[in-house]
Length: 492
Image (cartoon, rainbow, N blue to C red; front, side):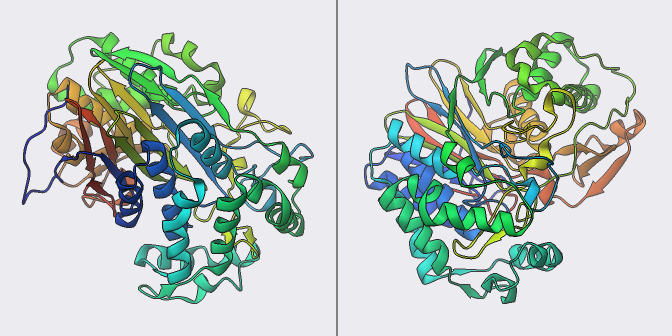
């Protein structure tokens, strides 16, 4: 299904082949945590949880225990399963905003860990969280990106009660210890999900929100449950695709791919133009995400000669990905996020975390805010299989996720490019009425001639995502990582 060739001193990072498993994630230390679990006999979900927990320690601007997690889980011979680890707006909500205490929905990541561990885990939760706890106790280095984001978001963090957070006074490269987060992770390892959704942690979260004028309370945390759902599935180009179901917007990727297939053969000089137009057309249905698979039959109308400037995708950036495969053929594709930088910036001092601002994902119509309702989420991992081989793919980038995965899948399946090259190739991203494009992209002149408003950015700009991939090819666990950002991969 997927071509693999040796790549050594090359721009694309190679596809790695393992024995006991393979993992790709948004940071090398997260990969190391996943490898540690695979080496200990853990499952793909065990390794995924361990890697996600490390990302929550290293990158609180992108993800954290105050945020959410979405995952797709593949087991050989079984239908794929979707984990929706995200929460609802407060039952007592009278207003929902895009920032601050009234933007916080119930954090779902920890409950998602508990659900995945109970269903597919082999190792105790405390063992899975051990690498993350070590980093909080021993300290991790503040990355230049994290330090710069603190500076940019300092006013929001101060408003959210984070003025005394140790992170705010640290320079790039400084060693950062997080004793409050360590204690929280240890409670979760000992008590399971109750260590977060009940007792001291829940009380501290509710108090931080109350102090900021929000309504989410202990009752909302206590009633939260992870949704375990069948994915949206699509047969495309001889492959079976499993997409994250509502309230994630994974179906938009399926709509764009189905729309491309409906067009038939497209001249090569119109391929990128068609991709931009199809993804923009799909984003017009964002507010109807709750319809799920029914949207796959909606026709997408595009002009193959001229840009229509629908401008649907938005300009959010953050999120972090983890993809894992184990020796038994199980694979997981996942994303973790707090939405905007540091989410709502509402800080919980006793826990050492900021809370999400997923309330900003509400819009209007079927996606309008209401008490107890889940907003549309941008998180859109994907699983693909041809019945023999399986590949889990994910990327950060909010509305860019659908666009990046569309381009990678088209390169692999439509153009016959091997996995490493498909991930490495130059990309475009439509957002807010513009088409961002990497400087080395060969289609710039063609797109400009068709009326697209191009903004040329440096190759590797964070807005073009950072793909993680892991799976089983010919019975061998494999992993591959983007060269963009700090993305990495490893095998056992």
